[in-house]
Structures are given as C-alpha cells and as structure tokens.
Amino acid sequence: MRGVNHRCRLGVNRGADSQWETRHYSAHDTFQNQIPEAAECDVVVAVFRARLGRPLPPGFRPQPSGEPYPSGTAYEVLSAIEARRAGKTLPDILVFRYRGAPTPALDAPDYAEVTAQWEQLKAFFDRWFQTPTGEFLAAFKEFTSTDDFAEKFVDSLRQWLARHGYLPQGRLWDRVLRGSPFPGLAPFEADREIVFCGRELAVTHAIARLREAAGRGVPFLLVIGASGSGKSSLLRAGVLPRVVLPGTIPEIDLWRTAIVTPGPDPFLSFAEALFADAALGAELRAGTFRTAQLLAKQLAGDLATALAPLQDALDLAARRRQQDAGFDTPRPARIALAVDQAERLVTEADEATTEAMARLLAALVRCSLVHLIVALRSDAYPDFQRIGTLVGLREDGATFDLVPPLPIELEEIVIRPVAACQPPLAFEQRGDRSLASCLVADARGGDALPLLQVTLQIVIG
Image (cartoon, rainbow, N blue to C red; front, side, top):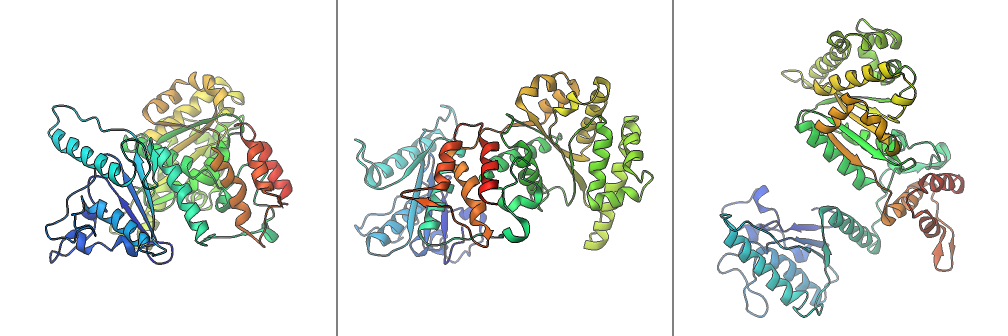
C-alpha cells in the first residue's frame, strides 16, 4: 500500500508473500529482492491467518543471528522489527493474527501442506510474539472475522495517522454557506456525503451484498433496520453515491439515479423520482411519455409495455455515451433505484396497487434495467412478507441488516463532520473529557441516533 508520506507497506499473508503474484517483476532476480524493503516504509501491516508463507531462495541474507528467515513474510516483519530495535523511528509494525485454526478435510490434496504451514506459523508466533506459556514478547492483535479485522485495522491505522500528525480531511464543509453539517431529524442526502461518517463498513457490506445478488442476475438489496437506525441516510448519502461511482459495479458504464418515497400513488411517486434526475428526465422527455403523469399511467399498465419507456431512455443514454466517449459499441446504462421508507407501500396504497407496484419493481430488477435497493423498517417486515413478489426478490437477491453503530462508529459520527468544517470547529473540553466524548457515551444504546443528530445540529449550528 503506497501512502502516507513516503512509503507505507501492506504485507497481507494469504499463503504468499506481499501479493507478488499480481505485480510485474523482472526475471533477472528473485521476487523478494525486487520487493521494496519493509524497513524503509513508514508502516508495515502484516495479516496472518493459517500460513507463514513461502521459503526464501537459497543464499538470501540471513538474520543477524545467522539463521535463515522462515519465509518472505517473516523476513518483512522481522527486518522491520530489527530496524526499529536498531534505533530507527520508523517503520511501525502492525501485526494481526486470526484466532482460529484451519480445518482442512483429511482427504484434501493439500492437507499435508496446510498442516505444515500451520505448524510453521505457530512456531513463528511462539518464538517472536507469544510464548506457549502465554508471555507476550511483541505486540499484536487477534481477530475473529473479516468484520472484526476491518474494525481493528481501521482503528489502528487512524490512531497511527493521528499520532504522526497526518490529518487528511479531503473535501471541507463550508459552514458559512451550508450551515451545520448535521441535518437533525432529516436524512443525510447525497450533497452531505462528505460529512456522512461512521458508516463506511455498513456501506461496504451493503454494496458487496448487492454486487453478489447482481452476479446471480437479481440486483436487489433489502436493507432492514429499526426506526431511527439511519436507513435513509445510509441509502441516500452512503450506498447510492458509492454504487454509481465508476468501477463499483464494473459491468455498468453509465448510471442514472432515482430515489422513491412511496405515496398513495406509488407509480406517480416513481415517475416523479425518475424525472427528478436531470439527465434521465431529459432522456425520458425525448420519448413519448414526456410528463410524470403520463409515464405513471404507462408504468401502471401492462408489464409487457410498461418497461419500454425506461428501456428507450437508457438506450438513448448509452448511445450518447458511446458517441461522447468514442466507444465502438454502446455500453450498458442502468438506473440505480432506491425505495426509501418502503413500509409506505403497504400503509399508503391499497392492496391491489401495492401488488402491481411490486410486480413492476420485480420486472425491472429481473430484466436488469435497475439495481434496486429497498429500505424497510424492521417492524414492518411482516407486512413486507405478505407481498409475495417482493419476498421472491428478497429470496433471490440479498438482505442487509443495519444494526446500531458501534462505539467507534459513534465517535466517527460525532467527530469527523466537525473536523471537516471550515472555518474550523472544536468540541469544548472540560478536564479530561470533551463534549464529543460525553455525546458518544450518552448515545450508546442503539435507539439514540436521532436524538444525537438533533443535539449535534443544535450544538454545531
């Protein structure tokens, strides 16, 4: 990983050393001799699961004791440690180890190799990090899952950045022109994406689920969370802006977006949301159904013809993109569609209208015209289950449960938007506690997020 100031090295141990398989190296020398020295980097991050890595070539320089290094990965970690113990101020070495043991099948072709690697890894840690009787020789962190690792890694890296004076803020929030970065009880919208903080892990996992569902041919994601858990903000300022970034869904070249909050006539709500996207609205007006009212009637009609206006608009967008970019052929254009407060489909529309709207959404998903994300209050899930078409989408697509923010996420929610403000702001400090820490402590419990946002909006006015 290139980074912070000079060089930042991320050595991830997955049975190979420093991802050498994916980079170009010249045949004039060994892999290890062409890998930048870990000891010359600012920070070295090593992640161990069940393997120590491949052995080094004959003749590779030994440890100061004269012993050979156990593997290339071990060399990078130990040489970095040697540099620090020799008096260098860098690199810092962050070591993470998975707590579980591998469970290969007894008849697996690589059983012997897996077992041997595991024994080598245990011996490495027993010698350099923690003795078999439990005495710690060097600092490291254990993790139990990818989520646990992500949280601990991000926390460690942020602490490292803060300790070394690196405070990259990215884009700033102009408080004079835009007011408080906190919207209170209103959701964070896309224009507040830069101050929508603390939910990066949830956004990443939600998008991963959507991509997996799209890979199965049903790009549908149901986001379920309690009232006040931040579903609308996650949808509007987190997931949707990320989905439409180039490369997030590699198969799609061009996106149009629409956010629907269903009303008594969900078809009209949908049509109005489509026209609200400036580019998509212009492409729809180039067709036959030039107003939201006309389009709504078409969408509510026979499914065989209801999808035609949207398909025509996306085909037009793809052709224009082809001309502008000089592509040989048109590339896919799709709609990133979000349905917020989906429980209103049931509470505000009659049963027949709800069923018809569900069939339209399912048809749009299954013919891959849209990538659909639906946010639903958890207490409304029994109502959702009564709509068979939507249940079928959920079964074939994906689900993401939005849980209350962790303490570290609450800190991000409170602190990072304030840090992004210009002119600069700072929380009041009294003794060894700041207002920020008090707010975070009081907000723990899962149902205090709306109150926290209102308080922050008032405090940071």
